[in-house]
Image 1 (cartoon, rainbow, N blue to C red):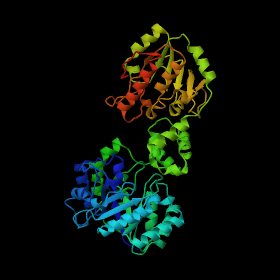
Image 2: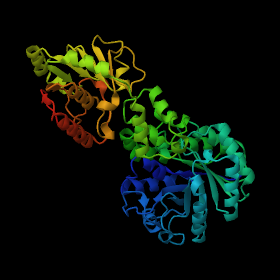
Image 3: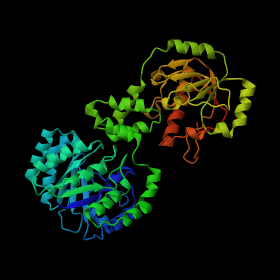
Image 4: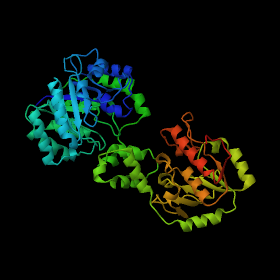
Length: 522
C-alpha cells in the first residue's frame, strides 16, 4: 500500500463561505495551529489574476504575496496554492521555487480547458514546484475522455492527479469506477488525489472506500476543518483524521483541529451556515452547480417540488455552468406561468370598486402599532387584504400571495378569500388567480415581492387610493422584521432591497395614492 496523506483546504475551499475574507490574524493563527496536527499539506489560498495584494484576503496575485503569509514556514508542512484555469495568474507572477515559499501548486481546470491546464502545469513544473492536476467535475468525463486525459498527463508526469467531485454527487459505485480507471491508467509514480464535496454525504464513505482498495500508489485526500465549504461543505478533517488514527495507526493531533473550530470558524459558521441541507441535496441529485440552489434558496419562495422542478428543467449544457444571469432567467421562466386572468381581474375590480382598501403587510409594526391600525379599521371599515399571511388579530377579507412556501400554510386553513399568482402551480383552495408576469417587480431581486405585486394589481384595477400598514421595510438593526416570528426570513442586501421596493412604490403612486398608516422606510 502506498502512503496516505491529508491535504487541508479549509482556507482555500472554505473561503467560498466568507468571500475569502478571513483576516490576516485568523489566517496566521490557523496556519500556526494546523502545523500542530501533523497533517502533510495545507492549502493557503487561491493565486488568481487581478487579485488584490491584501493580507486579510486569501486570494493572492502571485507567489510573492502568498509566500509572505506563510512565514515563518514550518519545515514539516508542505504549503499549497491553487490556480484556476478559468482565471489563471500570469506565469511571470509565479516566481521560481526556492524552498522558502509554497511547495505545491494545484491547477484546476474543467474538461473544456484540459490542454490549457496541461501547458500551465508544464510551465509551473519547470519553475520547480510540485504540481497536482485537478480534474474539475470528474464525473462529467466519459470513461474514454477520462483515460485520454490521464494519458495526456502521463506524458507530463505531474506529482499528482486528482478526482474532483465538484458538485458532491458522485456515489460510491461511480467513484470506485473512476478510481479503477485512474489507477489502471496513471503511471505508477503519480499520486492519486481525491477532493470531495458533501452534498450527498458521500465524502467520508468514498474516502474510506478508496483506502480500502490498498492501492500501491500514494494517495492524498482533501479535507476541511469543520467540513467548511460552500453549500454542504467538504470532508471533515477532524473526523477523517480520527478515522486514520484508528484504522491506519497514524498520529494526527485532533485537539488543534478542534481549537481551530472553536477559535476561528465557529463564528463564521453561525453567520454563514454550511453543511447538509435540502437545497444542496437537490442540486446534487439534479446534477447542478450548487450555486443554483443557493440562489433559489435565497428567494425563500419555493416548495421542494418547485425547487426541484426548476433545477430539473435547466438545460444539461447549463447545469454545470452557474451564472446569476442564468439563474435569474430560469427562475423567472418558471414563475412566468402565463394564464388568462381577465375573469379574475374583472371580478376583483367589481368587488373593490368604490371601497376603502387597507393592505396589511406582515411587518412588526402590526404589533407595535396595533392600536393605530385597529382605530383606522374601526373608523373606515375598509376591505382588508393581507399579504402572504393570515391572522386572527385583524378581520381579513382577502389574502394575496405570490409565494407558494407561504401559501402552503394558509390554503385550506383560512376563511378569507385568496388571491394568488400564476407561478403557484401547486396551490389549492383559492378564489382568484392572476397572471404573475402582469404584476411582477421590475428588478430580478424583487421580482416576486408580494407587497409590490399587490400594489401593482390594485393600481391596475383602477383604485385611486390604498392605505397600507405593516409594510415597514427590512432592517438589519431590528432582529424582528415580522409581526409573527414564524414569518422571519434572512434576506441579503437589505438596503438594496428597500431601495428597489421604494422605487416600485414611487412608480405605483403616480396613479394610485399610497397612504402609510404605520411607520415605514418607504
